[in-house]
Image 1: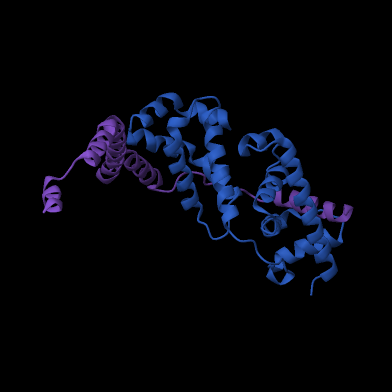
Image 2 (image 1 turned 30 degrees about the horizontal axis):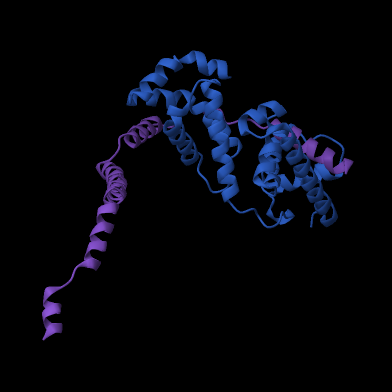
Length: 97
Length: 198
């Protein structure tokens, strides 16, 4: 184990002596391209805006639907009860004849 | 290093202009931070990934998240962390080589490996490049997270605290990963010693 570890350490010491690439500057046109891409990405496109608003509209309409059902629930059930009590005059005449 | 980066341009003013959508300021920021980013990218570059593509990805992430930067840490440190995590993601995505073989090594690399396995002498300075290539090939045998830790510890000689700041991992986790990596390397050396050079 000691031999293997020391082999790795000697290898690493040698590797650290290797010259590091000196040219760290951005290649020609790199910063312009990246900046343009980044700034283009920040402005929302028409499609993404439409998507955003359509999701909002869907959510709002769902909420409106639920509110209207809750608000009108009692009147809907009353009408249904009244319908059950309603006597159809045509049916009555037919039954008599 | 970070001090140099801080003083070269007025980062605070530059960041304000970038947030306001100023493209020229964004260009200045890229040119200013490129040396820092490219050094990290080169140190942890996965196989078959171009350093320019990876550094562009890092910068795109920086610009996307720039609104989240609160100033709790120096901006170059914040960028370094994004660069390191981007490299880790790429390393995780690539498959490891199935086996490390003598036959895959160049003549110089094989000589260096022979020297470290058989003699107690140091490798000559002339073979430094071959040693670095050999280290890169050995590191490819490790899990991405273990590889990153051992590279930062042994090659870049960073402290546990520095690695923790760059990766977000606890020092205990870093020690565990370093131990696991060294054990794997040790096994690899033992296998290579048994096989010898054909």
